[in-house]
Amino acid sequence: MHKLAGRHWLLLRGLCREAAHWGKFPELLQQTFPQSTVNTIDLPGTGRFYQGHSPHSIEAITIQVRRQALADGLLAKPVTVLAFSLGGMVTWEWLQRYPQDIAATALLNTSFAGLSPFYRRMRWQSYPQFLGLLLERDLYERELSIIQLVSNRPEHYPQTAEAWTAIQQARPISFANCVKQLKAAARYRPSQKKPETPLLLLNGRGDRLVAPACSDAIHDKWQIDIFTHPWAGHDLCLDDGAWVANRLKDWMNQPTV
Image 1: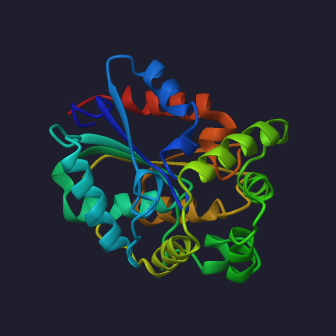
Image 2: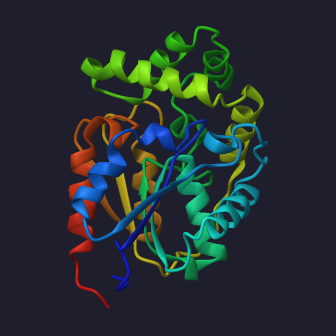
Image 3: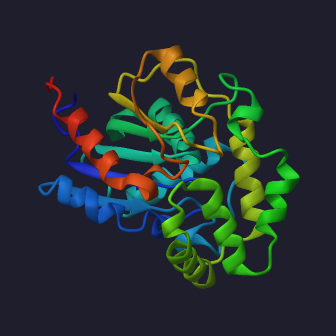
């Protein structure tokens, strides 16, 4: 493990989501690593960049995210990236292009074209069905439907839907940017070269959006360490953030090099 792994965390969300969707997880991660810094960054077209445009490719998104991280002063020392879903694709591309930026990487419930067929990478019946969900005009109903798709904690659905509705009201991601991100994710073909940076995979067996087999395929291809949650859904940090933080701590406690 890199000597700076776990010292400076950078959190990157996934498709059509922004930093605020991490909820209380950054605080939990900070409590787990009290001597570390924890920062988040938004993808183009989301969060504080919601009025901008998302590129059509993971490669272009990666370049913009890194440029923003440099501008924010987040890369003065190598960061440990915790990346979720589409964010995992961005981080893999980042590792290929600028490996010196990153001390270690944990990928949550991500998938790669070429390793997994599309019907496993996106478990809904069709892209139009998902896009129809994004076109739902009632924001609360839309966010509730998304939460029901990505989470297996129904007791938290109403409260989380309210919080996510407020996020969308404050910084609405456009339908066009969602489509661009969806296309970028669908088209991305990762490099076959395994990064030398320490890597970890985290996934949930209860993921109803992206098949758990997608993480298994990445593990099998490059022999990357993996921890699997027995019941959590796609949004691992929402369903069991403590489990995620503890697995990251276990990983960081491996011997340094």
